[in-house]
Image: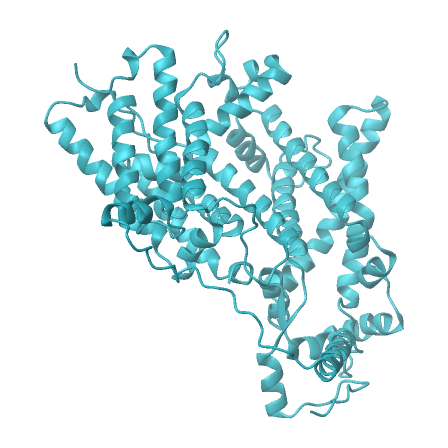
Length: 462
Length: 106
């Protein structure tokens, strides 16, 4: 096993070498960064579409009047639209604050920021050559680049400078801080800063979504991986670093093997399927009872399905409605909201449905049903010996990654469930059983998105 | 007196029955193995179809039961809550929830 030498400068590759490199994937982005990127993209899209419709001054107006009427009509009134714009903005700030606080060392360390924005001599030359390439004034090759190229660094620098300005001016406008004249200044500054980012954003989106050479960069934001050939051609200095890391790692593994020859075969985990045979002297009845209640394996799906179906049937016959989950959680939420501010809940179109004056939002079928669900689940798991504290995840990711994924997934599910007026239990299962057309549309959409999305997150489960 | 009976229960019985029904709901979900995110997500990688099997068995059993009960005149379908259809919100909501399902694992 010869240690291959890492070239100082990019050299022409043989066809086989290029082919092999294009097949090999290397990791570029952490899942937290990908989640943040798409969260950020969603926020920018919503804030730009709603913000454009909020500009009332004819001097600053950037969209036609029909667009303003359309967006305001979608929200009912301008004040609802404004409320939405502010809410999304506040969520944006909170998420960034959480990332900043928990990831100070990961995202805000000096070397990290420098890698993202600082331009070295190669970068400046890259910009110059790139410009002349676009103008077709030269055909020299681009200087080698780090993990981000000079164009990306310029955009990152612009965004890093403008985002705090946008956040601060937004806060001043939303809450009329300090004085009227400051608010008036904030309006102009907010608009100008967003405009600066928007100009860069257009190039960013064009590069990511349209420009053919940068396709791997776009997919790396979905899977976290880029192929080695792309890294070699477009981010040579980063490719060198990755290679160097790989060699250090290889050397360590080789030394480990040399130093500590394995004394015994590694212990294999006992598979769950292999169960001890039934003890002698037990009747068939106790053995069946054991299989039904105390066996750690789950029931066959059709048996559990019949049990679940009979429970659902009993619920319809006795209660006149189906089983549910998200509706119950909504009522717990309304209860907390009403405890904090009854006036807010009473005035709110949606929350007030759940909180009639003089009656607790908790006096509901679903609220008590959920308590039963927790108890029933615990009894079942306890009988079968499945009760344990564990984080269910694929073998390739860390616990904190799984927590982040759970938070992101849960947020999506909660939003989707309220938009559709139900979740997998309340709408798909219960509505499906009474043949509600919307419930079947919902169910098919759930499975369609699940199957479609599975490919992109396979790294986290398999 | 035909079902559903919900309106005729005193509050304490109503909420007690709600808890018992929920208890069975939670029990059968756990029995099916749905307490594991790995088992749930395995559905979407064609490794374990328990989610689809359990869900559709339950729907078919409940559906046939409801038809039977209402044909025999034991269940007044007019008083059974059937979720209203809102095509676009339910389509979009379903897509979001499905995406959240595979990302979050439950």
